[in-house]
Image 1: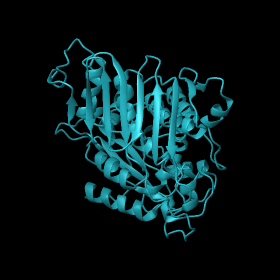
Image 2: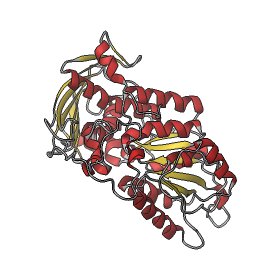
Image 3: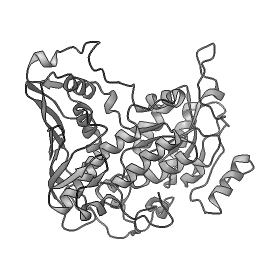
Image 4: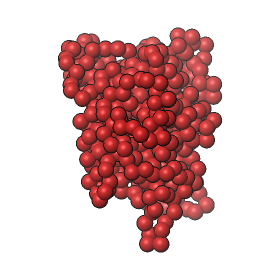
Length: 438
């Protein structure tokens, strides 16, 4: 471990001797903490005024969507990288060095995310880990005074509530990282519905992709060189390493994620609640059925049919199939077939309708990363803050609980409790492997 800086002493005290997997190859060029970014006379941003970011998770989403997007902004600086898979982390560091060029020696590298949040030269972290790590890392970063952008989703209802409350308590800028609210078609759909262009909304239909047809191979295998598998597992129950367990395939295993219902649902569910004006609340009744693999490693529902009822009378029906989002009202319908497909409507009057200045206008940012940086400076809530992200993720958790129980459940979105249902209420949380806690 490279040492000799004041930050190293802080990290050693914070970690209290815990061994860290993955070598810290180089300390970065020091970037002082900042809360505002100032443009110099020639239009560039002075290094001392850039928002210093640590990136935790350097897989496909962490690099392709997050790291490379932030590298394109002059008011942010990649300072540190973390991944339990050392080859992935080194690849990400090479991308940063190529982008910055010149005398940049590379980012601080570590296999232990706690070393990232312990640094006093980092303003914010971007979390792109598997889902089971999202909330524990977010909470630790918030309590260390960092702003956070984190991929969806939470693992349980309890996690989301604790996260949302902690963000509020600390005054943290927290972005639930999806691009949907800045995507033209989804933003327009929400505005059309909110402004009554299809009349009174009565039904939302969401179709999500199925899970994998194969059951996954859980046969124990040797842990690949450079992978700290125990840290990858983290708060999840111990299980032997298998290739189908890690990286992209973690999505199909309940210990680490919630299947397509959580992965794709976090996108389309957000637009559904945005248009329904229920993004700060939730449904009151949920029932559904799911299909699961009988054997093998993958245990999330690969097909599902779920119905949610809201207090305003709107029903949301979730099925498995080609991606689709449809809003049906008393005066017509609008829909989007495929991911970010073209807007379709029951009449040209609806599809060509203009939203007037005095009507409901929903904020449309320039993507989660750009919006996050802007909010770090202004201290305003980003366009997909923790509370709304939590309410969105709850839809997947509620659907899973209803399918697991095989019956209708009644939900109080104000208290976030199932009504007169102790069995369902016990499913709002889950235990974590020691020493990890919320």
